[in-house]
Image (cartoon, rainbow, N blue to C red; front, side, top):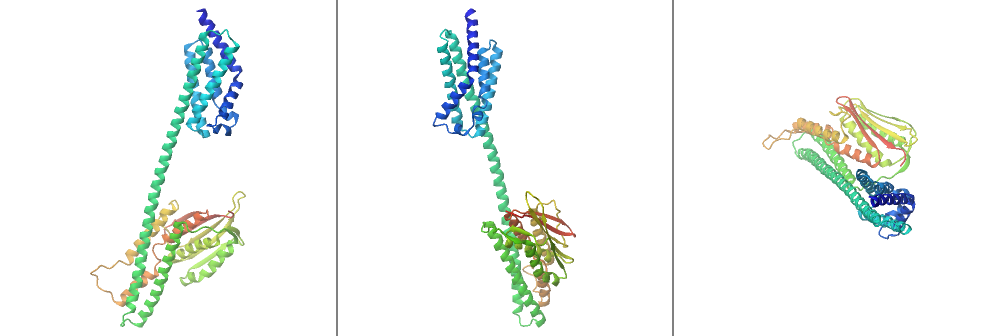
Length: 438
């Protein structure tokens, strides 16, 4: 009984000694780690970051040495494990690999063991059982620390791997959807090309007939010219789309007066609007000097204005712009508003979905107004074919989604947001917000 009490008293004295020499122990541990050529991360952390939860581990170790109650020792061991697990978390967050974390525990074990030997040399009267218990508790400390840190580290790695897997699966699903959308867009473009080529072929075939009256010949010649111009425009849009998808275009940023550019474009385009009895208004801050890609901004407004003029039967198109004052991020806004038929889907619909439906609606309009003749259908007379071809030529070409898709990609290239407001029968407004500086 006396030996037991004496041993407990010596263990408490040892625990107090370790607490008093905590700073020297931690310094010796850090020096040993920094001297190890296999451990590189320690040199990049501050002392506070390096020590981390280890003082709490040592507190629990000292509590185990000085405790006479079994329940207290169990609680102290659980506290050790919890602190060791948090240490493993911290090392994972700092970028340590698992091997480095385990080696650090080995150096801490050796630093504590050296301190036990020093204490023994200073107290030669220590009972043999006292030092044996201290060494066993130290071995238990390091074993628990290694296991707890490794377990926490492994769980974190597994969680990170699972998160990356989910991100990869989501990215793969998005890529598949993009591929499907891209394939659909090219199918629609092929349909447009086929339809326009058919109109050109029909007009050309009629012009070869000798019995076609002169007034129809003139009319078909004009339709042939318009068909070729329309086909050329579609091919140009497809080439632009292909270059953008292939990443062959880059922005060329320079300072210029965007108000002058937009006003000049509207002035040169106003005759197209006048031919349809429509207005084309250009209004905004002038001058408005910005940084940007003048060519791409002109392509954006050209696509939007020409598309708007094609679908608008009454009223017209308004192009407006203004500066947005923001000391942190100067911006400017461009709006193209028409009084056309609008989209069936409102402003809450994502732009990609709206573009897709715009193309589908164009297809439906074309099928309803110009059905494809069957193989056994009778050959139409020249006047009938003339009226059909004229109707096809006068309509806004389907597949406007190509031009709008180009606008969307150009806006992305220029770091601009693209918003849409549209209601059936009330027109459509495209609003873009561009940076004034890059």
